[in-house]
Structure formats: C-alpha cells, structure tokens
Length: 329
Image (cartoon, rainbow, N blue to C red; front, side, top):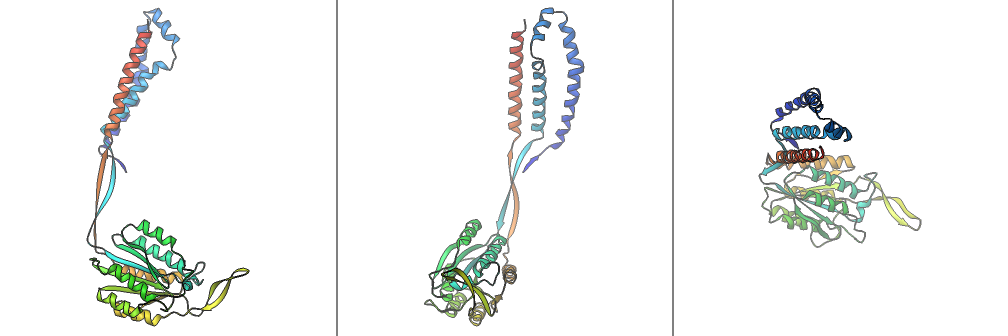
C-alpha cells in the first residue's frame, strides 16, 4: 500500500501553474527584447525547432514536481501480522470408499460434497495445524499436520474415490488419525471423521480406536453423510454409466459411541450439503483457538527514487543548455 508521510507538500504543486504564467508572460518577453539587438542570433534561433525552446521549461517543471513528491515522502507499507498463542491440531479423516459415489448431495456425490465443505472449513481457520487422512479398506496420510492451507487445499482437490477398495475401515482411519495427533502439544487435538458406511474392513475396530483417541485426549467428531432410504448410485454398464436406486447401510450407533468415548457427546448426520455445512460450522465454533493477532507494518521508503530522478533531470537540463549555446553563434 502506497502512502505519503507528509501529504501537505502536495499543496506546493499549485505553484507550478504560477511558474508557467511567469515563464510565458514575463521571461519569454524579456528574452525576445534582448534578442532584438543581435540580428544573427535571431536568425539562428528562428531556424531551430519551435519545440526545443520549451524543453528547459518542461524539464524544470518535471524536476519541481519530483522534488515535491519526494518532500511528501512516499513509502510502501507492507502489513504483517504477529500471532501469539497456541493453536489447535485438527485431522480431517474422510471416507473414500465406493459408497461415497452415491448422488444424494446433488448435483455432486457424497465425497465431492464432503471435500467442498471441508475446504470451506480449512479457509476459516487461522493458526491451527490441519492434516488430511483418507480411508477405504486401508487408511493413508494424504497430508500431515500443516499451516500451509494452500497446499492442503490443493491436496484435497486431488482426493478421489478408491475404485479398487472392497470395504470401509473406519477403525483404521481413526487409528491413523490418532497416530498423527498423539504426540501433539497443541491446546486441543481434534479429529473430524466423515463417513457414510459401517466398519467392515481393517485390523482395528472403531471403538478400540476411539479408546486410543480418548487415552491421548483427542476429541473425535463423527459425521455421517448420506440420506436415509434409497439413493441414486452410478453403475458402469455396457451402455455407459446408469444410475440405480440402492440402500447404503450407515452405522450411526457406532459413530455415536465413538463420540461418547471421546467426549463429543454424539455423532452428527448430514443428509445434504446445507446440513453438512451447518455441522462443520458448529464444530468450527466449538473448537476456536484463543490467539492474539497484532498488526504491524514494514515500510519501504521511496522518496530517494524521486530525488534521484530530479537530480538526473537537472543534469539533463544543464547539458541541454550547454549544447544549445554551442549551436548559437
């Protein structure tokens, strides 16, 4: 942001029109009277371009303008923020099993809706480290805890359905998330678990993983995504993708037990995008970071640039006058 420390100096620009009037009405008339005494000089000047005679005046006006701007002291103000206080460590654990292809979050499927709302959640945080775990029949760390939200959101964009998976390992997803948080020294450790199914794969049971979370003071917010009853599900056929009505079994009872064990009371259920947004907004409000943000500025002085330009113009005018005098007999 450009600012001027002494902007009142700009009032001095009002003297430039006064100088121009003085130049054209007084100085030029004096010059013409002086020239009448030398006929050869008049002839010599008359041969020169009418524009050249105004160059010294133009240079002088530009020089004066630059000096006034320099006196106003222009500078660039770069705003910085100093954040004090510890943040919260958050893991987003997202189900990428095949059932997340169901189209009940129209016009997108469950996974795309979860990614969109999770990205909005990330954008609202300020000083919290956030990581990303995805799980289907296995669990993977897509992004460890980080403060670089741009990288995290780019990784989130690339998350897709695990087409080769044959199950949903909620317990493994939860346990992997706990492993990422157990050594954290943050004031609060949180897992947001987003899934639409029931645990039918993996070596760790969801309730056992919830016990691990509780042992390390990790709070888990289970979020079930999907509407009750039959939903549209894409099926690949010889004639392309066709949608069939299917019923996807979601184990909300286990999700409720995970919430109880880890101290978040109960699981949340979202049947559409609006409900999912409200749930994550509510979690965002409950898990606020107590931080202090102090604004400060770093200034980059620019007045010397204008002074240097004015000095160069003064030299140019001096050289110009010497060259013109040499050409005049």
